[in-house]
Length: 318
Image 1 (tube, rainbow, N blue to C red):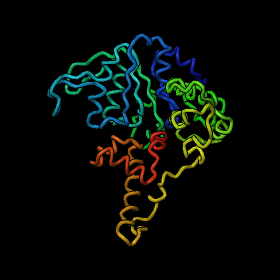
Image 2 (cartoon, rainbow, N blue to C red):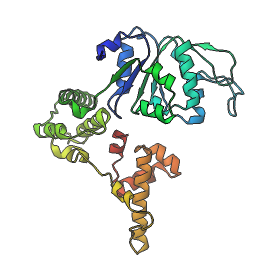
Image 3 (cartoon, one colour):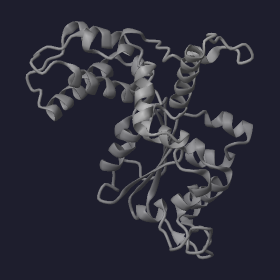
Image 4 (cartoon, one colour):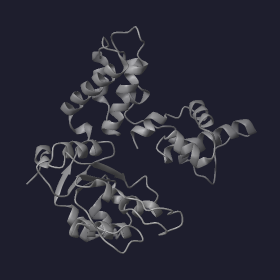
């Protein structure tokens, strides 16, 4: 039997949310929590894709002082902080096999161990997990435990991408446009019909996250005196459903680089490829990228602008 969203509100057990990047798994998880018997308690989010692997178990289960270098005091993890609420494990497919074993114990026995602790702690909440990965394939490849998959795959809901639901797209366009109008004090601004049509025609590979960023951009960029938006104010990627982001430069065979003979031109070509690559790798996050490659935030912003790298789109499609 297939589940609908209102069915999920009534479930007190573990729920697995599936769907492409940006479809709104985090938003749905919080909505489920707010409409469930856990709504009066904590909603704790643990993004497993952004947590360093060597710290992941500590983030989830906590640690005791002296359990590893740098553990100067006891620390509560997400499982303990959840209390009687909901623990949302985003990107469950990124969990290491070691942590998967501990999570299985938490789900099966309702107990967990902080790193370095021999005494179990009781888990009193429930888990909602989400992923855009193919978990059955990961089970076959040996990167995801079969027993954990069976434990998670009981109440499963797949969120469809925006491109498959024109009605939902219309509703969300109105929702986000109205929200950003109110936030920015643009109460007299209206969405023109041509822009609506372009938004309908776009394939939205970044789904809800991309749409939300697009609506914020549109409201922000429309001239203050305007009462009607214009298609020319839409982000560039709305004019092309398959934006290149400049990544075609990365497809050249590295053994035969296509570079200009003069040094300044060759350096510029290299910089464009390099900054496109690192910003794509870190999903357009300026602060994170600048930190990883050891340059200032201002320099990175300048380079992205110079080479036309659309960091907003990269974030939307992450």
